[in-house]
Length: 27
Image 1 (tube, rainbow, N blue to C red):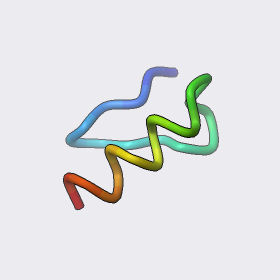
Image 2: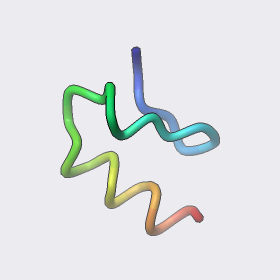
Image 3: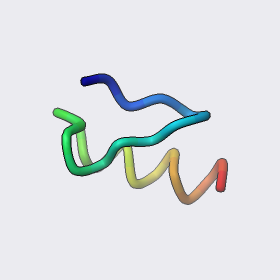
């Protein structure tokens, strides 16, 4: 599962740090 800007999946994202950053920045 990949983490994307439009549909962040932080729980399954292998790079949770960046995922949370994107989720916060693009929320």
